[in-house]
Length: 181
Image 1 (cartoon, rainbow, N blue to C red):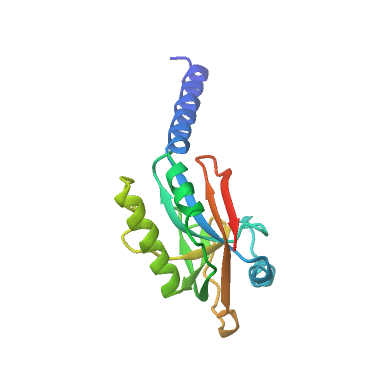
Image 2: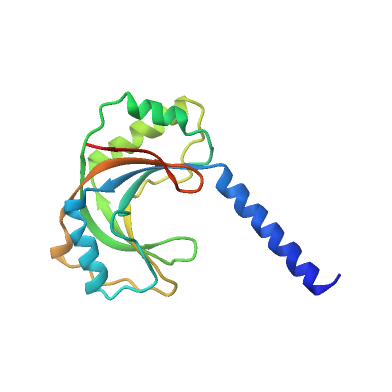
């Protein structure tokens, strides 16, 4: 086979896989209250982080990633639910991801875990697939950077953060629901 055609075929196959991955998922997240973002912006600067930094207005904890495209029932559920602010305390740095390229701050909060369980149970009861992660580890990503090293944790980073913006995104991470409480 012509190498150019072979290359094009691989690109097409990769594109189809990407489209399949995007076409069957949605995400429910809690965004950091704007007043609490300064800590994360300052950390990115103080630690001189490189790579793909999480932007202001995008710091969040993922409550549930769902490998299914029908997000409307969850949006309706959230619209009819009394949403609340949820707090969590910054606990420690960790490195996550298949490629070990995501520097995150793990968050400590019984409230977040209880909310995850509530939403997860509701989704499973409605026929959605169970979470892929056996251990829920709420965290906020600071950056994606191959070869990132774990910074030293300092007591001054242990701040309580408020999450007050409930967001559901579609398969392309476009917001389909946003409610600030």
